Image 1 (tube, one colour):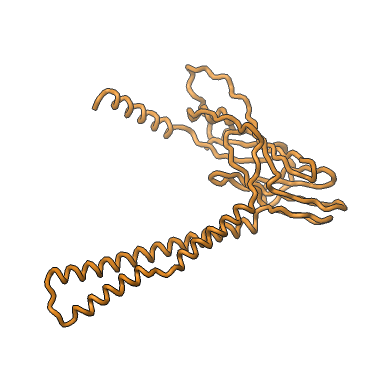
Image 2: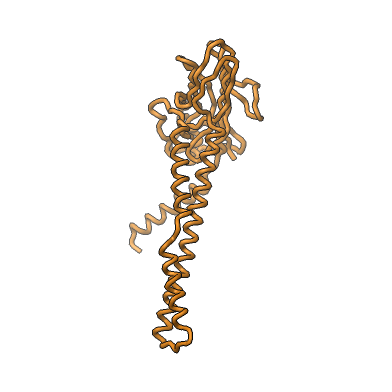
Length: 280
């Protein structure tokens, strides 16, 4: 082993050890100011404009998304269009504390809430830049359409008749029938066995592949149905009506605050959330 390889392996080992020893954090979102208004155990951020009440609560993190539930109440005498694609958030972060380069990285105690900068420093990770502009929510309609189309394609593949498998099975059966009552040479036996093995192997693989397509179709169909049922979709609220539904945003962990801008007619109302990290 040359010196360069040895040093590279040593650095990789040290990096792995540092990562293994780094603290971990539980991430969460809550209204920046306590409102003491709850729905299903979740505290809601509140805002009112032109008598229209908007409520927003944090649901969960998905691998690449953050999910909120929005609620609109329209007590006015005019209709109101609610469009999930018009929602946006702006991310902000508390400034990083001045750290001595020679000092050890911070080690927050378990249960301590820390900022994004402190969490990154404690894990010896670079702090990514904030989004350069407001981040828009996902419009569920194109995704529902895409999921339905993909589910249909997978279902067609699962139900497609396999003519090649039928032909191989028929060929194997024909060679077996032809061998009845006849003394075979070793080459003939091996050839017939090869055809039989090929037919069995192909049909097993084909059946497994069709099952995978069927499972994929079911999963995609369930995801589309879940979005249809739970996602906030574009709707016209008539006077006295209200609506609730999930909002999906791109996830951004390296922020300390998210200000969600909810559309109300031609204006927007801000709903402020603090993104917290609790040392585990």
